[in-house]
Image (tube, rainbow, N blue to C red; front, side, top):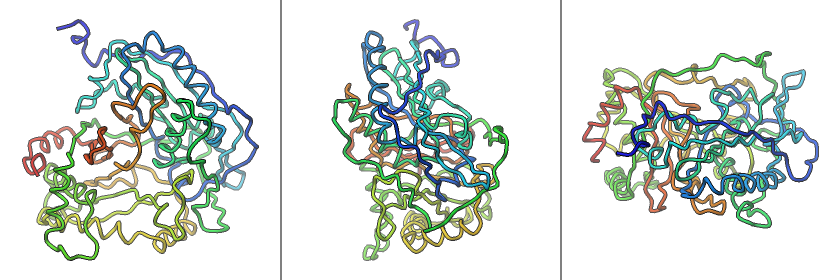
Amino acid sequence: MSAVAQIPWSNRVVCLGRKSTVIPARPSQPQQCKLCPSDLQMLCCDYIQKGLLYHMPFADQHFVSLVELLKKSLSEALVWFYPLAGRLLTSSDGVVYIDCNDSGVDLIEASAPDVGIQEIMEAEVGPVVRQLFALDGAINLNGHFLPLLVVQVTKLRDGISIGFTVNHAVVDGTSLWHFINSWADLCRGAATISHPPLHSRCFDIKGSRIALNLPKTQTVEKFSPPALSEKIFHFSKETIWRLKDRANRKNPKAPIIISSFQALSAHIWQAITRARGLPPNEPTTFKLAVNCRPRLDPPLPYSYFGNAIQIVSTTVTAGELLACDISSAAGLLQRIIWPHRDGNIRAELQKYKQRPTVVKLDRTIRDNSVMMGSSPRFPMYDNDFGWGRPVGVRSGWANKFDGKMSAYPEREGGGGVDVEICLMPAFMAAMETDPQFLFP
């Protein structure tokens, strides 16, 4: 066994180096972008933390030039995505904006010579992964004085990690990956980007001007979850097809079929509920962030830059959920997802306008809940900065709690899905030995 292999995870630290502030390559026109309801709700949640891993055996020799190339192309990308270079600003009457003032984003260089990509890619997520991201513990409200985007480029033993920490009141997952894809194209030598972002912040009710009673200090009490076990589970295309087939077999002539994602989500929800050993009369809730762009009439374009998501949920007792076959369990999810279209979306916007609030994880996470985030449709593996496609995707500690799940596409693009699941250690141990979960 090599000396590197003998180093325990707990001793493998990421050493931080130089920090650079990157501003748009050309000055932005000073303006203030008003935050919309979906943006405002995120102010007391964590920043988003997503990262890409690249195999690069000679990263040590080329790291300096690689970082300079990233900085130069990031500066060009910020010309298009200029809100990310700004800061949050709250007016005297409580209206929150993005002040597009070109304050810049941070790019941090780091090194972890004892850590290899294979260790990071293990199914059980190790503590060093958390160190691949900046602003650990920051909430979106801190964007009044912290950068809205911080990128940490970490040199590993056999490659690099690029960790993106971005303010969730400024972007959702769709917008984040739109930005990363565009930056990668520019870094690879593209003269321009394929899909210029739409900065209208029009996911709102016409004429609304929403004021919030926000904390006056920079320190806000933050949700701190207990110790969690975090693991990645791979579901092959064949397994997902099998779940979808079983979910639709009960009613093959139904006008709306149950989707692969609904069937997979129901399968995991039932497994987590079994692992928790809930009493039959105990309620359990499934939550899902829905991308509203294609569901509006007329639809918002993919390039809409900001948050255009709403949370839908359903609650049943544990006994009811576990008595269901997968068709009925997936049907519970279908009944909250399919109808969430233009009328329902606008009704939620109107409701928010009448009673604006911000989401705090400790107040919105119900006991025994599960929540699915991210999406296997996000183009995570399409980010070639000039040294090939990423070999892996990982996330930081932000917005994690017992029952939080994130879905990623498999790297090969064959229809499989990787699901990151966070659970209390005892629940994770029970689920890992559940034959119904492992062999559906």
